[in-house]
Image (cartoon, rainbow, N blue to C red):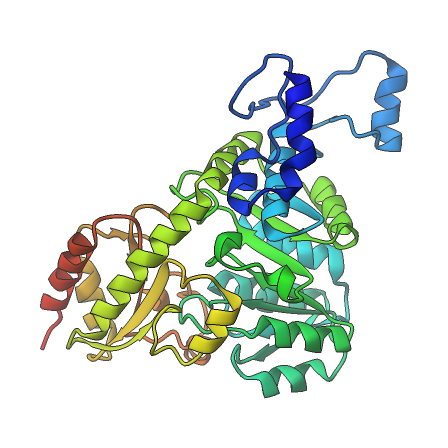
Length: 404
């Protein structure tokens, strides 16, 4: 059995990503299990004091404590690193934990950060409300304005951070160009790849330095557990590892085991999410109550050519604005639907719907929301895997409830 596993490890790097998503990290124990084992333990024992000292002092590679490492978490990291084309990966307790660990490891007082306005509301809050207290400065740029990126990066900056597609307006960052600008100015380029996942988009191949994931979303795929991850070169991940081990924003072994199972079906799910989302987006464009649909797979998207270069498909998230430009209209739509789950999470096989201005971005200042394009009549749908006709019918229930 061990000889057979050894042969597989030799050829694994030559196999397709779909196969690697299923087989990477599957190191069988003496029990000969087929599914990856879950190591539910807080600590690990040693045969003698010398071996224990070697693990603690010399980092021999043996697991010592679950805050520091765990074989199940390591297996998840190995698998995600392979899918992202990264040398290394670290796992965290949540997606925001991954952002926190990256900033703590690579920034210090006096540093400047260039931040896309097209980011998750909590990301902006973390930087503007907390990190600025420690002497960091944050400059915001329009995610699609390359002149603005160039101007912002012409001055010293430690790190540039963006999401693409953005949440929730589906704005697209030209990762190759922004990464090039970052390299020319000795700035780290960090890309949140949550919406696309490595099944559809690999920013490291476009020049990015680090990839952020909220594993809670599509990497799990069924809305079960929290987790985050950072992928990149070994040199850039190493200080992140040190912070995670000291700071304790560690992924649990159980959650890592769930994510391992999620990665096995990631490619199939992302293709199905994208197919469903594209069909629903095309249909929404035809509805009289809809002013504009934002989806990366639409021919009407202003960055359609860029999307075709960067991604294999449009992903599962779309947003749209209503012709009735009020919060009341958006809430009436939401309250009349019943199939779509009214929750701010996304990446689930169940379709979710939310009003970003009063949920994901609800704690931001009104001026910040407007700058980010999060208007009162904007609705976000993370399209799941239900029958398309059922999703259309639920939207029609929502449209019928909007006051005339």
